[in-house]
Image 1 (cartoon, rainbow, N blue to C red):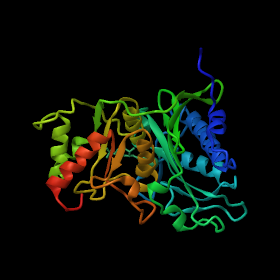
Image 2 (cartoon, rainbow, N blue to C red; image 1 turned 180 degrees about the vertical axis):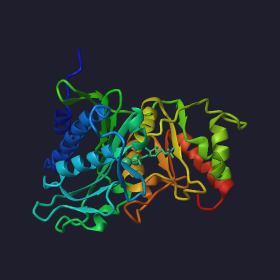
Image 3 (cartoon, protein in one colour; image 1 turned 30 degrees about the vertical axis):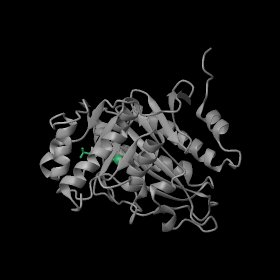
Image 4 (spheres, helix red, strand yellow; image 1 turned 45 degrees about the vertical axis):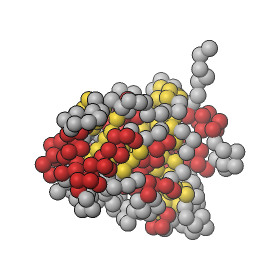
Length: 337
Ligand code: AHG
Ligand code: MN
Ligand code: MN
């Protein structure tokens, strides 16, 4: 018996809790629409003039790629007027984005990295979008900074889009992780990976070892353990590093493994952002049976102090992430990671 054809819209309606008023479900539709629009541009990046730098820098001090700006604009314009949000945060914008006064406000907050893996755009390697959804703290007020500086534990949904050999949207609303693949002919995301769970044993480790000399001793020895060079339980892994967090993360969701972006002497807080990269992916990873840590404790417990706060990130199969915590705790002591 062939499996039923579930579009993301039908799946969302089918799985949303009865009490839902549809606002959350409609927000996920909106994100799916934005993903389709970005996917069309991404798949033609080589043909239309959106390759390369836009000539501007973002708040991170990073050269903005034209596709970064395009993706940020698409998500804002798809979501700013729908009445589902009270505020947004984007990697590409300095401040929290309030909902324009002329539009009705909603009950949710959308935090997102509109285009992750920008350095890979010009070399045609997988890139993505990462998003997280919180409830507004006070539903009667328009968006405030308190609505966005929430720990990952408060997320009510999260997901990513991977613009790769196919375009996939993977999300969780707290009832498991579900993957949808875009059928470009239909313009529909179809359920292709229901109830994604991390397989055991894990297959890969993913880390940029060009920074080895700048890591703490604990992280350096953790890498040696991952490579089977430390006596004892050899994890028997292979190495992959794509340089797009979403692509490295998705591979580990499918095959099992760990992705690491440790703190290092030039980036004492790490590189990846807590609010719209680490926390949404940590939410997904825990829903899939894995774990995410900053090297000391759960990513999901960290309360952001600012919207672009960076954190060290170890995320994936729980046994591999807890081993990173072990090496850092025992070899780096209480020093900051
Ligand atoms: P973004 O393009 O949104 O700035 O994210 C890039 C991040 C992440 O995607 C990836 O894992 C990491 O940068 C790669 O950094 P390195 O080039 O330092 O390894
Ligand atoms: Mn990113
Ligand atoms: Mn980005």
